[in-house]
Length: 261
Image 1 (tube, helix red, strand yellow):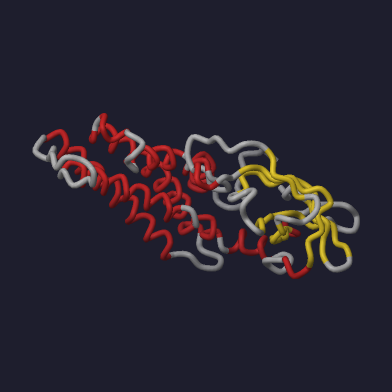
Image 2: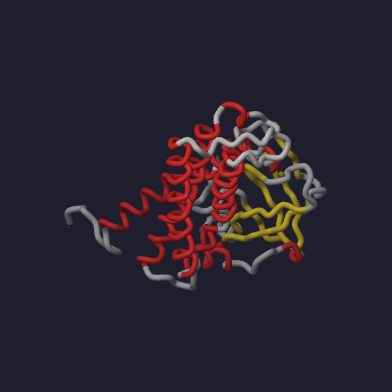
């Protein structure tokens, strides 16, 4: 499906109309990176005509809409943008026409760019838990809680989950290349799903293991918990999309169908 935000060619650039949902730093950035579809002469829209434009925040017709009150990712201030006949000059094109579509089709690993952040959240939740149980959190009494078997088991489980996610991620990202084979693309989906879900699971386990004091907002763990839960919602490779594509790719080869013909 082509992007619903459109760019109509005019002398010196394009006129952009549409919306951008979840625009990071909306109302604060100088430019917004916007994916849109260049309108063809006959008025049709094709995904292969995707443009990636840097829209000036102060251009006439750019509006910031709504509030930003999410579960997590509060620091991104990703409000919505509306574009009404916004002129964007040719120099604001971040990629030549057609290159984004080629990259999306032939370099799918580019959609893994958010996973290092969430792998970092998983690591941070693990590190906090270890420091907490060792009595090494700044501003807290140096009370050790590491001697309890239940705490030791939980930390062991967190470490295994973290290392599993890292191992799969490093394997998948090492296979990034133009036109990767099917198996590598499937591993990229698996890594995306695993990192995003594991970050949330580790942060939940960290809260349960550390106990009540650790949920105070003066500590990082509540923020890690909120932010990590949002990872599985990140388009275009949400957790559900990754599962759907993995299942289909495992059971169908290219061109196969169950339709009777």
